[in-house]
Amino acid sequence: MHGILVIDKPTGYTSRDVVNVVSKKLHTKKVGHTGTLDPLATGVLVLCIGDYTKMVSLLTNHDKEYIATITFGVETDTLDITGDILKETDVIPTKDVLEQALQHFVGVQMQEVPIYSAKKVNGKKLYEYARKNEDVELPIEQIEIKALELLSFEGRNAVIRAVVSKGTYIRSLIRDISHYLHTYGVMSGLKRTRLGEFDITESKKLSDVTDDMNLLDFTRCLRYDTKEIEESDWSVIEHRNELNLDSKEEFVLLTYHKKRVALYVKNKDRYKPFLLFDKSI
Image 1: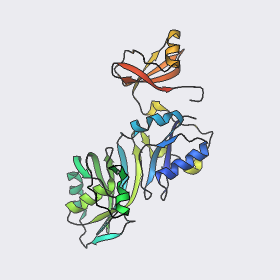
Image 2: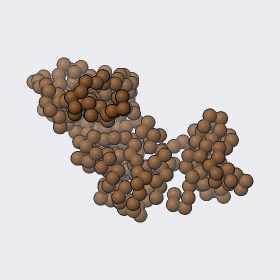
Image 3: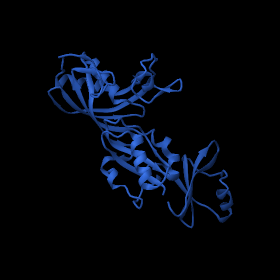
Image 4: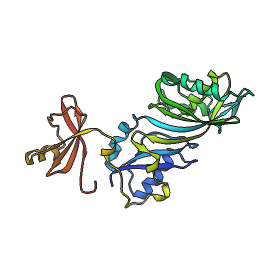
């Protein structure tokens, strides 16, 4: 079984938990996820199954959309509602002031990676430093906020929609917005509604996963050319050798009698095999 599966991750599960459940249900160890979601978060978790695990790094580069809830007046060590409270305040922004602040954060910027994250520094995950109360310099990464929209605001809680680039931490964004407003705030809810071309509307619950279900394929998320091969090319493909292909795309789908046989990826001035297809794909 090879393909792409979009799961609506339930709260309380880590991304690794979801991988383990799906791996067991599909009877394969070749399952990889394309972007970690915190246990608190729900929503789109894109899984690559079988030979499609080679595509994990490609899909993690895509933009993501989130619906996030901000609770103002408090800051925690984890930057979300599950952490230990570090600071509190009675300062709550108005709706108009918050809307103006959101627009200030749209664009390219630098963001500090939160200490409670899986980002590695000197070969060790940041949360491991945090749990041992060890000092570490937090990395600062360039990100891009594509869109921010206030959906609702009641009491201390605001709900926003955020479209962001790879590597953006919504928890850190909420902290930075709150500090800009001279107050504190934490993430108290998060739902990922889109990753690249994959939307929450096509996601499956974990309970829906079966070993005979239909999976999505690469045509949903890659730009590619299609080229019909000659019989003389068979041995080159079977031996996973490189090919000279006239194309401007990064990927080329090779077909034989209009049936797909391989997906090749650009490698300098030639193309090398990326996926070889069989009857199960």
